[in-house]
Length: 491
Image 1 (tube, rainbow, N blue to C red):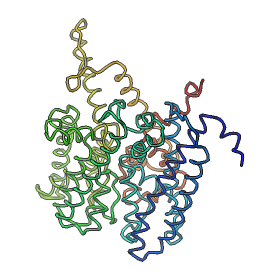
Image 2 (tube, one colour):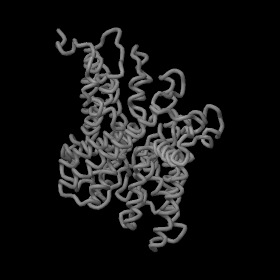
Image 3 (cartoon, rainbow, N blue to C red):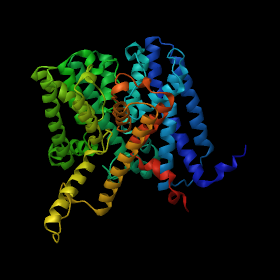
Image 4 (cartoon, one colour):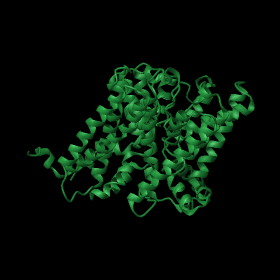
């Protein structure tokens, strides 16, 4: 059988070949929910089975059909594959939810839930989460966990076996301004190390939840969603369902731990020392900002008479840690907190955690760089002839990085303003629009106003728009925007 003429184009063959392989690989993620459904005697087993078989065959055939020797992956291919696969990623994740008639979800709802899960946003359109079967509760947590570090990084560990260079994929997927950094000389070893660290942190979190009094199944689901900073819960009230300070402390602590650059985790593990944590300038800045916001929030809710001083500190630590890292787990009554506290926490969600973590937002390192440059400008006005280099952790920040940080910040805020305006144009009030966009583009998941309890209050157009916001936030804007550049397509 002759191949389609379009697939004879070498670059297109590379894109289809790798997308096919990644779809084939991701289809296996349907197997664990199938086992849960089988164990729980849930008819959703057949929904996951049909999804698995469909994309196993589609991905496998696309991979084999375009297979040829001497495939070389270029930077341009990496960006195209990343964006295309995240679109496919989202579609595949939504399929079981859409195909199951018992859920009664429209395609817009299923896509929103799938995108929210895989981008670790945690916003949900399901009004009664507590009423879902264990299969779907686990599946939603699994979406968070897989999306947390990115299936692309997992695939990179396998790509060398196919004779395909994976560095371009890795650089396109990893967050932060310093994308060229590696943990180990070989990229495959890097990916395996990242996943090992990630899995160990997830197991530790689940164990801590159980020790704090959470049932085993809930502990597993919340452990997966916490270390991924995804925010999906097994209950409508999220962590607030348990009315436990111990569980909130675990959730807050592991939110912060998961917001740390995984490079720091790797170095600390390999050298068996805590020095990397103490010496990391970004981490110190991140923890300082978090500490200040925790104190402000605790004083505000205590002054409002909502809790006693101890409970105010616990709830403030948990919700601040959850929102600043863009985790999105919440207390049951967070929507009733003073509006000024909610606005502060929504603004904190733009801050995010450290680069190289599973968090969303702009990232602490970028804010640290911008803060140091702003301070340098003040000093430069006092001493115009002085040479004042900007240093982070003892290293001089180059002009290239400075341009990258400021341009990213400008685009991030500009796109956020556009989405807020678009929702306002659809008839939503300003607070709802701002909170909804903050929840989606920062991959944080907690809305306010009309979306405080569920995002199902959005119309279909708004849901599709917020799907775009979630994907833009997860990919940090540039991989998507670059595809609309004429300069990118030249040559």
